[in-house]
Length: 351
Image (cartoon, rainbow, N blue to C red; front, side, top):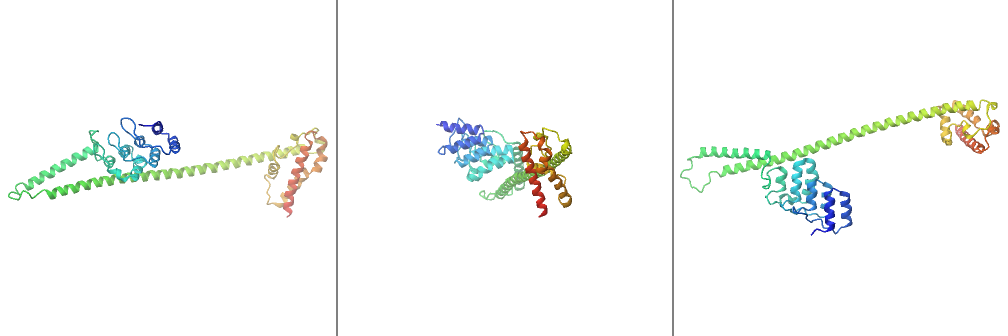
């Protein structure tokens, strides 16, 4: 009788919930997965093959699922995988049939109640008696083969009629002919099997080449989009710095044009900082934007101008009386930090 835990395993396989199935089997390592359900007497491995679930199939094989277990029709999971591969093509063959075949090669010769092996189902050599018919291709091949046998028999009869009168009846005049027909039949079937396998291999190769080509195209497209994004970001940053530098120059000219023009009650936001509410490094980035640092004389001249502008003593003489009391200390500290950064940069030029 199937336990409640086994019923839960069956439900996880039927609903294709692979992660839940994996966690549940890991939680219950003693659980037997070779149980049967319902009238068809399918095991979870039968069900996984029927659904085409390769992940559940591999997990059940690792948990010791019996590949030779038969259902009510005598079919093993390999029989069901063979039907699935023949119906869906190379992908199902690689994902379902090949893992089972590699796990138990001897299962290829297992017979169901109709006397059919998984190999015969895979290559379409025959249908089961339960199906009651053959595929159109197999039926046409059988009709052609039967006609060939009849023609060969008729030709042989016409050639040998009366030629063996008086010969010992125990001698079989058709022995060589039967051997030749048998060899030709076996060669024909072997050639069909090789052609079928080659077509599978060729199609799989084309799929891999197409996947590799698509991957390369995607990589090139993503790389190009990334380069375009970096260019747009660089242009946006350049435009932002240029705008801040222009605004900084205009505000400096308006605020520091002369001590008489400095209005009273200056707050922190009224000071023409290079980057309002930004760090000292951001302020320096705005000040140095657009300046060629390789041109040392021009660069030193620009630094001297900025040093004079943000020198703490000169700034105090020019603006301290007009500063708002609540922002006064913050303004003076910021001016001092900015001046120190400019002095450090100027000192590095001398060394």
